[in-house]
Image 1 (cartoon, rainbow, N blue to C red):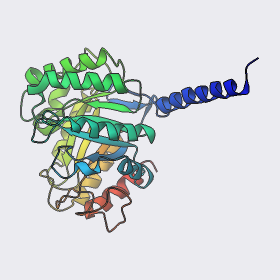
Image 2 (image 1 turned 90 degrees about the horizontal axis):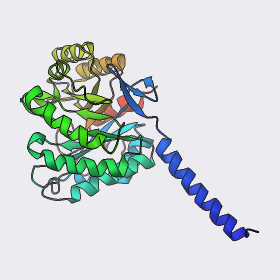
Image 3 (image 1 turned 180 degrees about the vertical axis):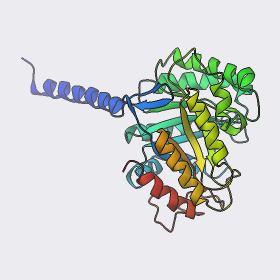
Image 4 (image 1 turned 90 degrees about the vertical axis):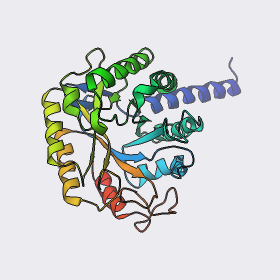
Length: 321
């Protein structure tokens, strides 16, 4: 006969297993079909926020907290966040491994909150660090590959370099390493010219692996209808896009909020089911920052938010409405 104590232990263990299973399965799996990213087999789009470069000493790493993630979920109603791990610049991952800990803090918090989360290799020169990228993403795939929440972004913004000769071979090598461990989570690949030339990628897409999307970045003060035309060409050529970074201001991250062009982009994303993460969770004194200097890491009032921050909050909160 089994004692009540043993029964209790079995019940506790079963509950723990169930809770773990629920945590893994709480968000629908992400897949790609043609030029659409699907969530649980349905074409729709997510809206959320991107963290700033994680680099040590840059000042914005203080926002890499579970509290910030929880606030984005509860107040902004975000459905996705992006953890932007600085790689090769001063204070980045190659110099200071604590950057990885910051990324994992955000990923763990996002999973706990049932948010999708992008693990971003935030570099402009990723092809120069292929081995390091492979090692990092292999580690992330082993740790998080069973979680539907996790999306891998293997190259933030390539510069004006060749898609076919430089970016694509790098991407295929990193994708192959991830797929050997995680066969199905979404992988997002950067495109030339700061992730604007999605049309170039669409002319020579990655065909050796499935569930691949391509990065599209815009800043409303700089990138307007001509870039939406490139995006349309890319989708017409059959590739799926994901706007892992966008701003309401100019491409340098500063300047005035351009509401009309931002709204034009949001309409375009809605019409085409393109998910997006706004740049940036930061208190730097520049136009793209979400919060004003010295704001807390969560619990923001409207006075804590910048003009861009209040505008972005409205966009994200109402995205699924």
